[in-house]
Length: 452
Image 1 (cartoon, helix red, strand yellow):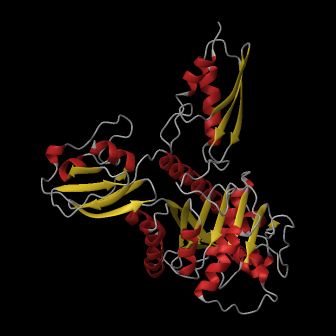
Image 2 (spheres, rainbow, N blue to C red):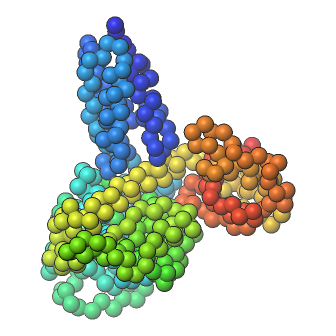
Image 3 (cartoon, rainbow, N blue to C red):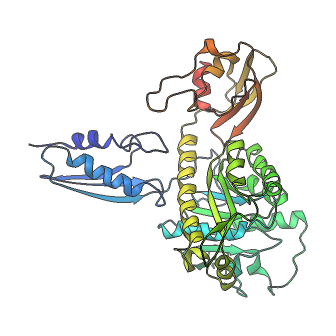
């Protein structure tokens, strides 16, 4: 019995991307299909080589297509094409870098640079083109962590830009490379530090990169503002440790990125517990679950926990990060898992942002019964608060499988109103309601349609 390409596509539509909530055919993942008699071959092009479900997709695709009458052999090739972050702002400084990702923390001493270096290596191991920019001008540690000390960058004779160093499969640049002596104290005023960051953004020959991780200094100062004003960031990763004092300060850094409309890719909890090298038991030295709790409170993704091991410090001092030196260790595996989660969350953000056709300019919640949104194109929409609350898209209010709405307008307090509004990247708004509800993210497109 013969079969057609359409039959194959129909079978493949049964495979749903768990993050993007669409089938792989609608997402345009299927490429280069070939049918030769009873044999079928095609590529599945993922949005990142670090996709955590690529092996599952391959197995599902083979199983579904083999169900077609007449098919005897299925050849599936997994490929990837990392998409450019649809920020709405052209990246004039670094046009060949697809996704710029800030790695930040509210306070020092949380292991942010160690996390940055290991995540960069973990992404590169999946086949992605990755760069690492050490923007911590006050305490550059990346050169030592990557085992490149005492070397200064060369300059490309044509572009007159600095040529980044390459080690462990990634490109990197650090202010530590510009010092004559590694132990020289750096005394920078804010404008000087900001100028250096701009030089690293526009004056380095980064080439084509899927991801450029930017290791920021702790806090919310000039360098962070310069970065967000100079290039369109695809998102930010926030590093914290479990204890409350770190979590409280880190939260301020996260809020800064939200105010600047930089999407939060997720929170990483470092030093989540000490791993005994003898019995391998994990002891929560500082506390337990602070990062996860922070993510739940702020409604941002939790990317994972990294345990505290003696080898992490030793690997950094030796110049070979743990992902390269001890990939099978608990921390090495944690870094690789977090890298995959990070790539998946970035794909979700980029997919959601690409669908945005209009953005809110102002949200007026002063009226207790009506919320008024003024859009950038001048359109003004009025939303009765009771109705807007009933249209919450979260899993508590809508069945994710059937799409059935679990809450009715009649069951909502007639006096319900919005207490707080927070932007979620460049694609949604988060409302905190007076009835205590606050788990729904209203995408701009959803709000636009509701307003019509």
